[in-house]
Image (tube, rainbow, N blue to C red; front, side, top):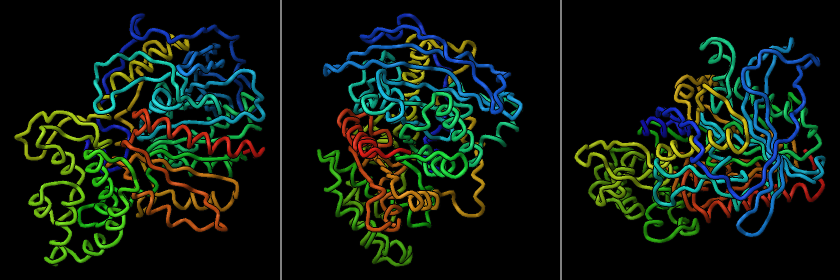
Length: 524
């Protein structure tokens, strides 16, 4: 299942998600905070001013919090948990997108930045970015292994972004508690497409901005994995169709072009893009986690390796050169690499990288391993040590946080951390070519000379390897010589933010992008 998943470069699961545990009073003790319920938010209205009808999710709940962080900072903010209705012209609800918004108190809404967060999949809720990256509270996870049975208790997040931007975490249709009306086929045809998905997300962002009088605020978008694929599309949709300009876009472990990933074995780019990440895994095992140390591997991957791969399987001299160099860079057994002609697939690397220790590396972060459930199986099997392992604690923590800390209870409905029915039914609808958003990224950057893009990757991510984005970003025009889209890397994998140092470094880079725009008085 993991191999099918990662070959499509999706964060979301073809893996089944157990129903989220319901909160219990002892599940997650409250962090040091004071909370009170704020007055109820105003009634929602449709496009023509009429009251919205047909809502199924509970009304929004707003609470006010004071949170003490470990370094002595104190945050005062309001938190609103609820759902953004998408309606037809008559005001009838077509879909409700669950969201959580954190807004700092005693600030000027006109100049205060607001950032919208989406995860990927398709089929993933925003809980990952919410409780592992930017929210006021965080779920601590293991650095080298993640236990599904660990405590779901949250702690104050030292690296929260709430210091420099308000936060809105959105769940697309059929993720989290977000739901749509209609039959299964109607929902699939309307929302499980690239364009339908982007339209619903852009509409939800626009509704939140209008409802909360934040159209004048500087606006930013953060998307992870397939959420990164969404980023240029959402920016363009807001810009062209809804009259809303973003000041910046941050893409975590994104898929910018599916044609670079998940190719059949006869396509050399599959091996070129992942070889530097294989080398990063070997270096990290040797105690080195620095992209500078990968310069030689990158040069080889984009140069001699690519050239020798194109010479094909009938050139024995090319195969000998490849096999020797790949074995050296990856640390894999020389005979194994020679049998594979230097063409190491993702699954092969996972299985062989630490086979001597009886462990399998995660495709999402080779630094995280699990014991091999069946060492005698030639193909290898087992659940992923990152994606699968974090499902239970993160699902439980999110349900508990929404219901107890934020006071938004959704009874008798499953919380979909990763909805395994979404990705298999997704319709990319891009003709005969592979889905890609490089065209939209280039057009958006060309139209707005002030827009800035940050692309962030973990070095040991095999699902969406950093070198694929590196090669693609090199194809952007110079735009007058200004650096408009920057690539930054961190130790770790697809969710590099589970590592404390990487999460802290990423926060600094995000703060630099967001405050760098807003301190100049620039607005979206």
